[in-house]
Length: 295
Image (cartoon, rainbow, N blue to C red; front, side, top):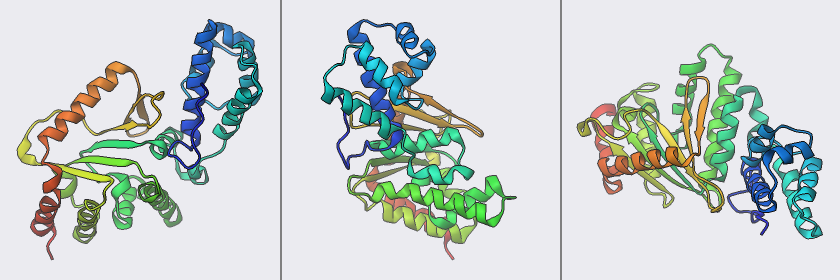
């Protein structure tokens, strides 16, 4: 059965379309008994290229997809056209393409996954999650890493971060479940005035039905995610695996192997148990606001 995302659903960005098409091509290859090496020979490519295609990590040439479909015995015109259209759509640039001058290539992949996710679970130890940052807080964070950049570049980086947040307000938004270490709220990024606005915005965010926030207090001591911040992305299509995203200073890790997923999922579950319950988040944020950032 051909997987084609519904119009207007969450899985409409190019990244997720590549993943969907890659998954379908892998299933067709396996059901026809063709090896990756054999498939690569058919389109004059390497076995590793076929592997990257099936993982959705490269773009697709329509001719290559057509040749593979023929090799896999897909002859029905309707099915072929649906998959070829998927290949064409998967090569369309995402909204973030226009920010290419300030956006590293390794982060573009994350934006595609984020835009397509049905559930985003994240643990943060240093900064408020980008999806929940105010303009002033986002600018302060950008200045930490790009303090010597021109003002116009700083504003483009801030605009990119704010544009990401539109997905939380769209018609079919993902669920965002974030656990914030208390340090993210105590560290005065941008100064007290900026933090007053940011903590107030987080209090407001707790009222959104698709946002769940928890605070990991200092009193908790050591906990399950001592290794640092990470994000788990889950998609509505059952054929797509979860992805763990771990950002580094100049690159990022994308983990989708079952053992890794199980390890990070278990750590996230323990974090949510050890953190203060969501019902207390607004109260805790209000207490931090009065304690650390009162005028």
